[in-house]
Length: 248
Image (cartoon, rainbow, N blue to C red; front, side, top):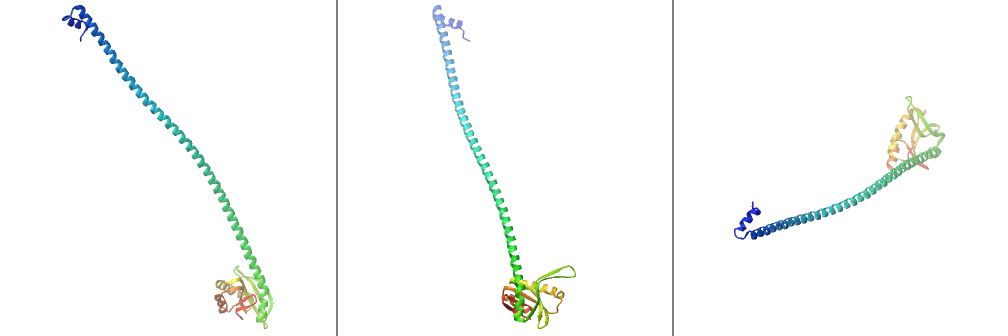
């Protein structure tokens, strides 16, 4: 290690002792001053680095603040959307309730309409039967010479407890011979209805109490097939004013 004494001795080899001492002092001062400048430079670099780091930190803090603001805005938007969704769900629930109520009203209306139609159909049926009870004997009297004894619905009960009801049963005589007419009344008589009534007539015949029993169909309309089926089966088809098919 180079010391002050060693430098003094080195300078005295060339200079006088006072000159050597002066040179060592100047050299020592220069070294100390150089060290101070170097330390200052290092300190300045450190300060610069701290300033750069602080600036970077500030930028990051600003970016974080902006992100926080954006997050807050997004949360507000989500809250608004959630509220709108809740209102939409409420509206949907109300609409569903109204739809259910409308369906119930529609079902009730349909049920009431079916009851009204059923009642109307029943009323028409009863009206047709009442008209048939009055009209059939007159046509049979005019066309076949029937002398009426009775005309009206009758119910026939069998030994096994089952029963059949015939819309109109006309009882009377033609030329002094007792006859019974089992009558089915329909607005528009179909072939299937004719076949069904033929089965009923076969069951009823033994219960009528008369050997001469005929099937009769009273209607406003009948297809060509229905008319032929009546004639082929030995029945009689009447419209409100005359015999249309078949006969005794």
